[in-house]
Amino acid sequence: MDPVIILALMAVGIFAGIVGALFGLGGGIIFMPFLTIVFGLSASDAVAVSLVGIVTSSVGAASSYVKEGRSNIRLGLLLEITTAIGAIIGALLAGIMADWLLLCVFSAMLIYSALHMLKHKEVVNEPEISDNDDPLVFEYAGDDGEKHRYKVDNIKGGMLGCGAAGVLASMTGVGGGAIKVPLMNLYMHVPIKVASATSNYMIGITAFSGVIIYLLNGSILLDYAAGMAIGAFIGALIGVRISGRLKATSMRKYLAVVLLIISVLELLKAGGIM
Amino acid sequence: MNDSGSTAFVLRLCVCIGIAVIVIGLLTDSTDILWFGILALICAPFLGILTTFVSLISEKDWYWVKVAAVLIVVMAIGITISIIQ
Image 1: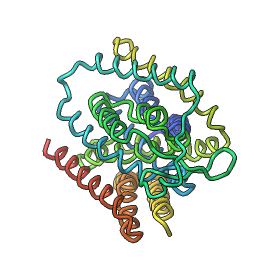
Image 2: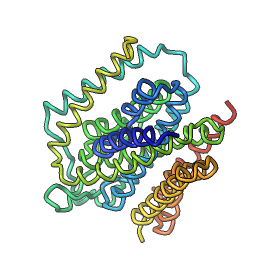
Image 3: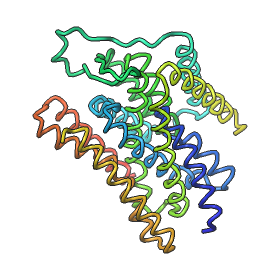
Image 4: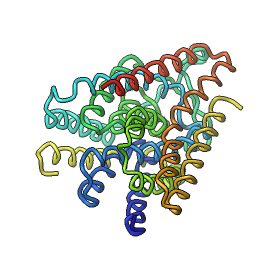
């Protein structure tokens, strides 16, 4: 393959990796338009390559966040159960509901989440000492460098929400992280940096189930995937560094802006313009 | 090493091995090497779950051992359904 194309793929991967690592998004929203519009891949080829990029970005970021204790592995495992079930259901139901309707619902959820994040302060449930044995009480390092404890609220609703995210992601190919991060932060009261780091950990698991099939079927354009993966890894490392310097309040605002941009792009897609 | 440390180590090891093999594959223009590099990369999340599962067992954290076990089973079912389809 032409080295210029490899470098271009790496550049896209770096950008997507940075955004993905910062905000707990998979990067598919960046990969897909570039792969289809700029590189001219078919939708199915682009999905396969994008999934490799998503896994790489996710794992690259998660390896740092998990080590720092920012990714809540336990919570991620729990929420991934219903996400994976949702993805199975979504794959079986694919084609039953019109894509444009799903994308409109998805965009509406993102707009609501973004506006809520901009309008309201973060709510974190600080547990009582008697909650020490509660399996849903965890610790994280705040912006002040001190350890803080938090309790995850609304776990059943959160798991249902992740199930819906799995269905949507499976049916439309979008939005796992864009739903999960606001869901964890706004509804389950997980601190935003923990929510985005945990989403990074989860996205790789979700993407794994899909991409392994593509690889075993020989359906991945290996050189495209390779360039994208190298860039996504570099981008993830950069994103982790930036994330460490960003205050939680700023991250919430920037994420809200990113969610609004994603919602506009998805509405354009629903309307057949993109 | 606790579950976070060992999981982080496995994730970082897989992604570094995967990227290194991919770079070799690109330089030698070998699709077989590229394939193995990508395989190493994309298996990282699942190997991370297995590592966490083993660590949780060693920590005797039975609540989360069950959670990890259920997730592994659900993922195996999902992959099986995908293969059949």
